Structure formats: structure tokens, C-alpha cells
Length: 325
Image 1: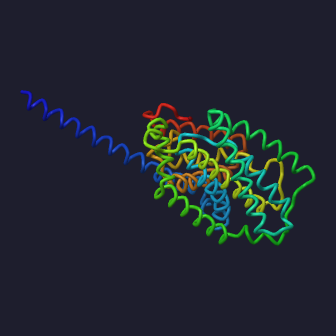
Image 2 (image 1 turned 180 degrees about the vertical axis):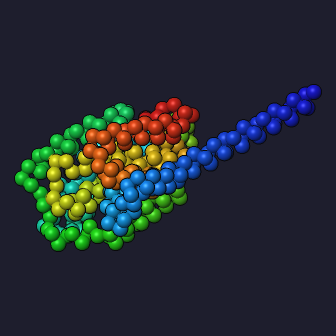
Image 3 (image 1 turned 90 degrees about the horizontal axis):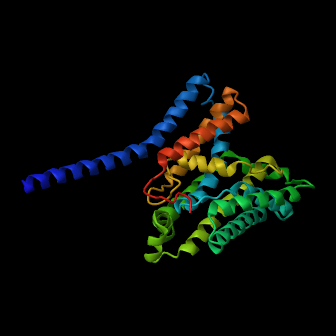
């Protein structure tokens, strides 16, 4: 009797284990299915306008800015944190880069990266030093640096027209490939990437395992800030100037893209860099499709908000109680 009960229990455990494996497989395939659905849906409902050569160029521009920011944000989110300051950081970096544009494009790019990295480091230090939630800290710095942008752009900031070549398709593809490759290597094959996922899985457990928690958090925000600076530089190149609204909404687009790509906001071991690529592509096609439909900005924001809510509900891993630490 006991032996039969034991065998039955083992069979149930195996079945449950198989269910978990199948569940993970299904969740991993959902973003791919979502991407195909969005492309087919808007291609049909727009009368074939979505996949025209001219429109694909527009989509590429949208993917580019989102994927750059997401490559930095992925390290922050994998730790279970959020960075709401990315848009304003990119604007400050763009403004400072424009101010030093007389020194050449290379100097402006370097300055944009350094400014972004410095502000990201500040966010990390405030989060770690005051033991304050990262989302609250970055919300505060978002407003602070948006105000600084207002001051810096009063007199107008422009760059030489000769820099337009940096807005070309080839340049964007090269930059994207290099950054994504660096992100994959860092996130998947270095101690830093593994530590980020360990922190997201459980801060206390990671400390006991020897993970330098505070240092890893600061470094994650540094990378997020640096990629925000890169976003700001290319936004400057595309517009030719800096405005008080530069970078507005960037952080929400990046967050939505990562969640759409299948990465949970709770971070942890389920964090994957592929979420950056898939989510950025999905969001770009979605936004473009809504524009072709002729929907105004308010309706588009409502649609994105609803999708974000659904995506968070589906991707949230309830095993991690603290979603945002």
C-alpha cells in the first residue's frame, strides 16, 4: 500500500514538473507569437502600408532609440529595480553634448556618455546610500534633470548640419549590433550579469553568497545612465538641436518594450537579453501601426498603458514578492 502511494506521489511530482517546464516554454514563445501577430494584424488592417520600404525605415528609427535604452535598463530591471529618469538623463546628455559640439563629434559623443554615466551613478548612490526605493529616487531625479534641461535650452542648442551622416541606416545598424553584442556578453557570460540576476532573485540570499550588492546596483545604474546618454546623443543628431521635450517618454517606452519581450519586472533568473530585441521590435511595429491608423497621441498612450498593464500581469513572477526594490 505504501509503495503504491509512493509511486503515485512520484508520478504526480513528475507531471507537475512537466507542467512547469511546459509553462515556461509557452511563456518564452509568447513574445515571438506576439510579434508575428502584431506584424500580420497591422499589415492587414492598414492595407499593406506597414511593410513598405519607407515605413520600415521609420520603424527602424523607432526601434533604434528604444533598443539602445533597453540595453542599459535590462541590468537595472534584472535586479528588480526601475529607472524612471532615463528620458531626462538623455536630454541633459544631449544638451551638454550640443554645448561642446565645437570640439567635434567624437568629443560630443564621449561627453554624452560620461554625463549619462555620471547621472546614472548618482542615481545608484542615492538609492544605495539612502536605502530608498529606486523607483522613488529616479522619479525625483527625473523632475530635477528635466528642470535643468529647461534652463540649458533657453538660448537654443544646435549642432553642425555636417553631422547628419550619423543618422544613416548603416550607422544605426552597426551601433545596434555592437551594443546588443556587448550587452549579451556582459549579461550572460560575466560575473556582473550573473550577480544582477542573483540580486533580482533575492537580495538577502545574494549577499550571503558573497555578491557585493551595493556595488552591483551602482554599476547597473551607471550602465543605464550611459545608454541614456547614447540615446540623447543620437536624438541630438536626428533633430539637430535640443528642446525641453527631448527624451520625453523614453523610459516608459523602454520599460514597455522589455516587458513585452517577456522579461518580468521582478527580475531574477528569468531575465533575458532577447527581451530587449523582441520587445523593442514589437513596440516599434505597434506604435507605427497606431500612427498609420490615424490615432492621436492620447489614444496611443491609452493603448500602450493597457498593453503594459496586461504584459506586467502576465510576466510578473509571483515567487518574488518584492517587485520593485
